[in-house]
Amino acid sequence: MDNEKKDLPNKPQEKMALLKTKFPPIKVLECNPRYARILSESYAGTTSELSAITTYLYQHHDSVDLMPEFSSLLKEIAIEEMQHFDILAELIKLLGGDPRYHNSRGNHWTPRNIRYLTGNPYSQLLADIQAERSAITQYRQQISHICDPYVQRILECIIQDEERHMEIFEKLLDKFCQCPKP
Ligand SMILES: [Fe+2]
Ligand SMILES: [Fe+2]
Image: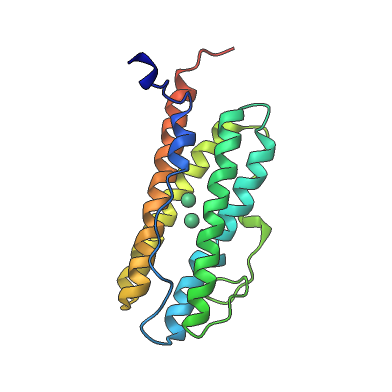
């Protein structure tokens, strides 16, 4: 029957953003403050969940009129970054650290980490793709330095999310580039 075949959603990127990764239980093998310090770089360093949340929410508000599809995706992705941020805080505590907003060298997180790029969704999109790529590289390096299978599994799940974010942004960039210039 025809009515069984529902119309595909118009915005596949939005659909993709809703596919949540299932996270394993948040636990660690044993207390290890050195591992907590390593994780604080992805928690509140330059390339970090905190930088992603603040950047994406700003860009979400900034691009709402210029590029509404990008704007709504940014908000959904920011919420997923907040979930990562929360998970990292929990891991840092379990490993014996204090989840304050500083990087692995103890430097406080700064708003200079935010990529505003006001009024330029194209540049925002390019910068966001690059930031997701850097986050993935950083998490992979951390996995190689953290010999704790529980933490490694959780970081692998976060990487899956970041890879999906990167794909969503890349698809949007393709679409953006195909649009006729006004
Ligand atoms: Fe993230
Ligand atoms: Fe991400």
